View 1 (cartoon, rainbow, N blue to C red):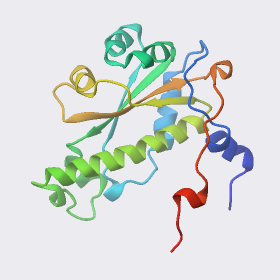
View 2: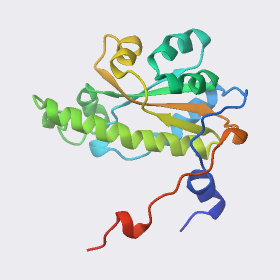
View 3: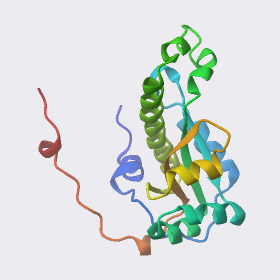
Length: 194
């Protein structure tokens, strides 16, 4: 059964990428709700490579801001929360728990290329679920990739095999700071039915 048009508007049709933010905090409990909603999105073999660091405190923001492209610093500083969405290259170690009905961990043994591809693809999928869950809970999103990946990894994922995928500001967007919506391609420009 299709969901109500107002829900589609909130998730897709009227949702925007925000660069300006209202001075309104995001409760940690809401971030927990976000996780509890987005965790149900499918990944291949339930591999769940996504790892998230929520940057909220002024001290943590001060560590992150110099690692952002200059054009992304002010909006990241103003956002109540900045999520660093990473991918754990050690995700196969969790497969005995998350996909217990077969030996899925063995599929990845000695195959770094498969680990990298699976981690990137599935953490990207999870990042999309993350943004839809955030929007469903009334938050606005500002995803971006303009940052120094190696430095973010060293600063926030040191001592792990987690690599950053993308960054997403979260909060309550300031509609006064939105610019006109960019066009999207028509179905026949990008799709084909065969």
